[in-house]
Image 1 (cartoon, rainbow, N blue to C red):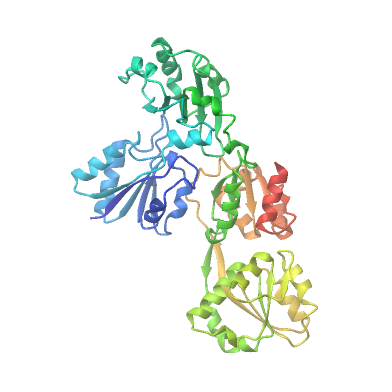
Image 2 (cartoon, helix red, strand yellow):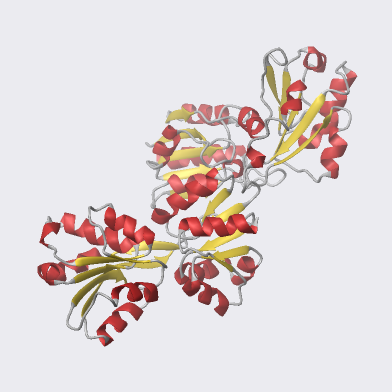
Length: 486
């Protein structure tokens, strides 16, 4: 018998998830996730985890609640560690209690991992404090999904004071406002509707109880929305920190491997962007090939790295083989600042660093150092361009190439995640080719496209995709290009 974790994934912003949720997601062998949880949380899963989408879109459920309960039970009985990922918190209008009772009935062990709930977090991101001294000393959360049918005490709700918050109630906005006014609430009470809060598509409409429905409909708002009523709404401009970030409103797609996406993702998130990761390439390490060259490593005059993956695969293999790096007398060369940083983190400072992330630039740096007869070792990707090795051989150098890894095509876990993307970042020709296979040229051509350098740009040109090129062939250079576009 397996175990089930009912996991609250927060309101949509990928970093608003708890440390425990991230840790347990990494242990899951099967997960079921909802639309409101978003696909970004799937990055925390292990590669062998089975993923099931449960839908829960208004008017179009991919699975009913009974079907979800049955599937949780089935997966647990198969021995899986199951993660039931839910937007917000599992027990706040998330039907987590029903799922827990269904598991309990079958004697299946479960845990609940609380999530940051949307009534608080979404309003924070909209500049609206849920409570405020002397203005709102309480807040009250209602489900608005069936407000015309639920037995809400509208008289009490209209007179209770504090901040009123309605979830899942956009289609009943007229009913909610009408009942509150009918039961004595001032029709001029400040009111706001926040759509898709904490994401790049966040939108906010502010008005009064008497006109908020008309304003929201005129602005083409749609679910998921949160309705907030009370004087705290008046802070929405003054405290509106999120929508002032330079990349607010942009959904930016990173296409590189999972291991290389972290730094860029963090910087984009800090600038207010929502990040969609599609790992169009996966790294398959073949560093055991280095064994054939172990006895020769001390004989090389230069060791040349053309990527961070090349650095990591090389040094990790030496450590695995208990090889003392002090035996290496070669000078080190690196293609670009990221590769230099990776070498430096191993306690070695490269003597030659290409300013641009292209083999031609690295050769320009090396040609003033190398001479005929020099022995050069290049641990690199099987997919990399042969330019550097061929050029060095023509100049009389003895070059050994070792394929320490190769890039293979990644998988598209969520087929719909690319729809909301505004900008796509390509960092190699391989990411271009693989993304075309995953989502198609037509889909990519509709987006703003940024290439890290001319080699990547040439691949885009082959497919007639218009792009901007980063002035610096680095993560910071790409971000500067995106900010300039803004």
